[in-house]
Image (cartoon, rainbow, N blue to C red; front, top):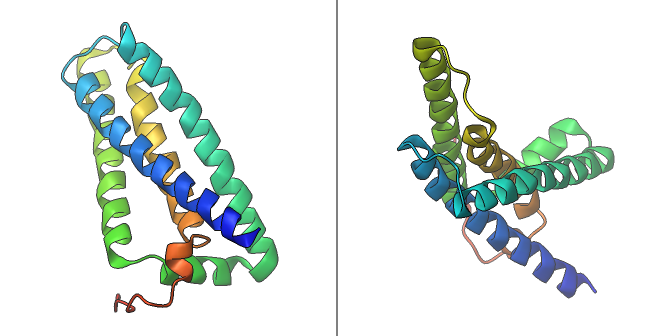
Length: 154
């Protein structure tokens, strides 16, 4: 039973990573002037739903961890479970989200036109999926495996 749960969590982590990759591709499409038509609109709708699902997964797991061990211990446990490559990836991805939202804001200020809904979808999807990835990684078999050497971080 526990083995099946860890496999489901690992598959969820792969799905979240694939979703974040598709969001990066959609970000490029949106920012080079794509109008969100046809296949792109379907992908953007899927990403909007993925963002909602990932946010629910994050809130569920985070609340479960907080109720079990307290707020400070939850953040400490998530921090220690993440390897350095995952921390770097999440920082880079969420920096792109911040830059993307700033560029949408600047474009709105310069042109006076509000961004369309689909321009926010990949940004929100990356943010929600990265939060869900962090909280699920703590539960994954990769984090439970004692074979990896701890990496010193600040």
